Image (cartoon, rainbow, N blue to C red):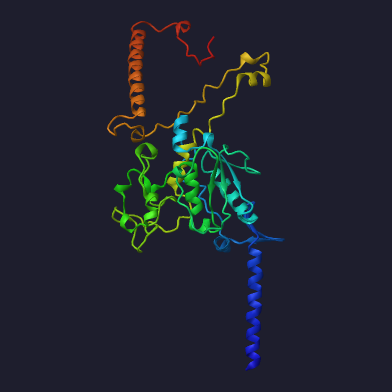
Length: 389
């Protein structure tokens, strides 16, 4: 009997030792793809993942989750903003967001994880998260500072109003920010997307139970004004990464956010991914200003380039049209909803002009039909027709 008991103890100790080694190895890993195959690199070993266990290992090692292939149009047109609007909405001009990850707060594995995550965010919209090798020495340069030197476990409630347009913008992340969704909500606030539960029309979809909220957290549930919300044309999004869950900051265990719509989607407690509407909002903000090139001084152009002898023989292509920015919602502009938007008025004006042009062309064609066929030399040529002499 005692021999079997000793053997069982030895088996338990061996199992514990193997588990400890595996856990230590898993703390330093890297997941990557090569020619469509999945691999995990653990220190000096590279393990190829099979299709049936790739999902299990992915959840075990907590890989950043971003839906890069969305059904939304990646080339959707964004808004154009004045300098005053960029200041008010806390946006980043041209979509360039410098950031620095504190080496004291986080180890190399976690820093690499943040880098991979932000690189994927760059692919969702016209954003450019650019890493700095060291934080700027001055107090005026605007950049994101990821740090948590106090090793606090409580997450902050980030919104665009939390940040400013000058100096370091501190974002406190914990090591479990990918699993609990804190980093997704923080990045939405960093780029200028307010939380969905603070939308001006939120009372049509949810009810805030202030009597159940911790008094010091009431400001996180404050509704913003119409001129601070650019997404009046997008449906309310219960699945947004920035939306509070139903029991967020409850003081008595009761719900703080309740959905008004019958049979509405449940407000999940964890949102560890961007919703499709979150991605659409980021594209609305940066797909225009992020694709606009910076102005170059004429003197610099003269120094860099000199036109050749055949420069005047070339002309720009007529097939490419300059894209216009998206028209901002009337409620954001302070216009009544029943008033036609700028786009509708422009379309009506174009339609009237087209009708007049069609009537004039009909009159001209009727004059031609009255007489005999026109001589080929008298047929008017189009500007693009270069085949006729």
